[in-house]
Amino acid sequence: MCLINFHFHDHPNYKLIVAANRDEFYQRPTAPASYWKDDPNILAGRDLLQMGTWFGITRGGRFAALTNYRDPDLPETGDFSRGEVVRSFLAGEQSPNEFLQSLKKNKEKYAGFNVLIGNGDELYHYNNILDETNEITPGTHGLSNATLDTPWPKVEKGKQMLQDYVTNHKKMEANELFRITSNSEQANDEDLPNTGVGMELERILSSLFITSPDYGTRSSTVLLIDKENNVTFNERTYENGKFQREKQYRFSID
Image (tube, rainbow, N blue to C red; front, side, top):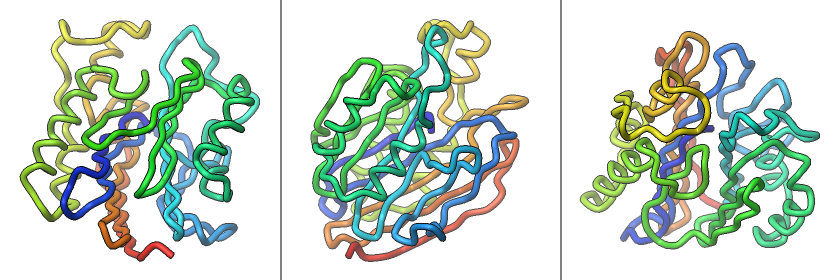
């Protein structure tokens, strides 16, 4: 997943509001979000190559989401799949802090990543390349492929769009949050970051919703946890940049 816009606390009706995109090569086999047959407690999409995931929640309210860390000079693969980080937290019973302490001991076994872990009451960010941990503060945040709240154009735009919406609405509508994730406007060249991938690719990657001949946004996810611990999980999936289907799940946290 390459962009996670989220609003934590600081809203009269919701603990957590997330609008996120997963960007991946179109040919990588993927299953849409569902309750996993081998662990029915987990609701998540699934990478069918490594059997991990990029975004998920459990019936007990454990939440995790992951982005890759972009640096062409670093290896793209590690001893373990990055999707295993999310799967392990969702399937485990450790507190967020305990999980992060264990993860730090093995940080060099993974290619670069950012991960959000927690629940509706506490939330943490960790970057294994920078070995950086942040306890999420109330308000609007953005996470792409650098670190938390790095002011890339897509991060700043996503944060501003989300903040404008949540500030002016007491009830969150999935369609309005998907309007944010579907924004495909590219940034101006003078605003682009230099992450070592070349100007043409920087342009393509600068939009919230990405399309290119072989890589782009594969799914968008809206997650809501309200003050009564009711969860709404909506996922839209795409094929070669074209909308395919939408699935919605609702449950109350155990």
